[in-house]
Image 1 (cartoon, rainbow, N blue to C red):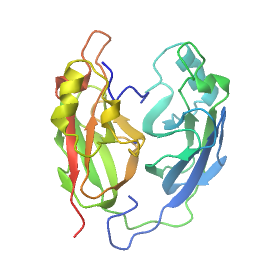
Image 2 (image 1 turned 45 degrees about the vertical axis):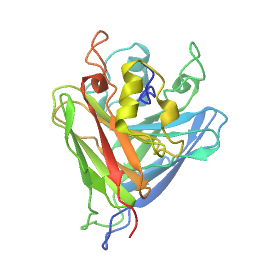
Image 3 (image 1 turned 180 degrees about the vertical axis):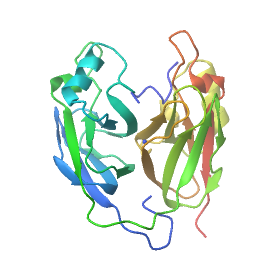
Image 4 (image 1 turned 90 degrees about the horizontal axis):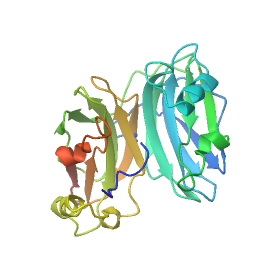
Length: 280
């Protein structure tokens, strides 16, 4: 099946006065990350810019205490489990084409005195090495926050189960929103969202997917470019920030599989659409 979920594995605020998050820009090149070695803990928004000639991702996760990045990479290269062994939890992923900035942003409440790993798991073509094997990985350490943040923005929560999205906003106002992802199921699930082209409906996408066609042409290239995911009974550590366009529709689904022989979750009904109201 060729779906818009074939990527590897992600508001400022609605309204009201809230404490502004610290904004950290991460720059990807061929093949490295330019990022601060240390950032303050607390509410932080990551922006990902791709200055390279290849497509890259900013994939960030919280390392378990006492685990090094080298130990994590050793497990990954050996195709051994990392979550729960070297990784305490995923934060999210941002994608960016060459010479562009990811349209989505990633907000996370960084824990003090911890280490967050950053990798790019893309490869330039089948059979080529993963970008992290070419040196595209980084560790970001956190320091104490500059000030206590008492006020938080309004957040819309996307709730996943086995195998549906029982809770999410069916319709929202245009503008910038922050989305959280909560997995109440027993299986690992993701929230990967794309901006449908004008005139394209959910039914038309499902019809193409049913015949294992390529649905990528049905999505606008100005899609948010990010994903959030979580294991069963957990929430993603990061939230996704999207500037929703008025009068448009965004489709989201989960493309994970329970095992190699099981169908993708979107084939089992795990998809949905968020409609954006027109401006007054």
